[in-house]
Image 1 (cartoon, rainbow, N blue to C red):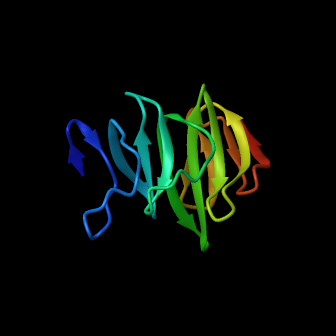
Image 2 (image 1 turned 90 degrees about the vertical axis):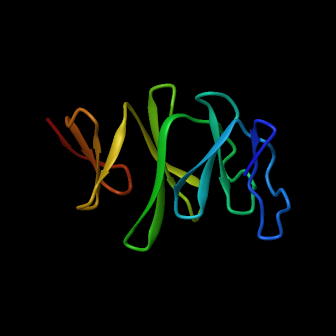
Image 3 (image 1 turned 60 degrees about the vertical axis):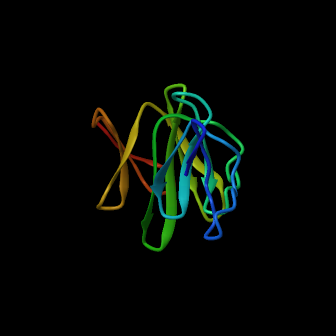
Length: 124
């Protein structure tokens, strides 16, 4: 919802349920990126609560694989993979990670592949 150049999450009654942000985008499942500046955001849920005690930059997204909800977020050139049910970092790796539909993570340059637990399974 846009109000006076600021964005908020609102509930069905029209009540603001989040703090104000410069923009809010849906990043998957029941989560949003609430931007606190042009490129810095915090992860919030549908209740407007910050769910990860950190701020991120660059792209981030959330997805479900084999009934587990994962999030990939970037900060200062490092990708962090979260278990969104536990809201804990599973592993981190320098560079950008993407999720392959076959059930593994791959670095953007295609040189390294990682298991769901963060174990390196292949390096070119």
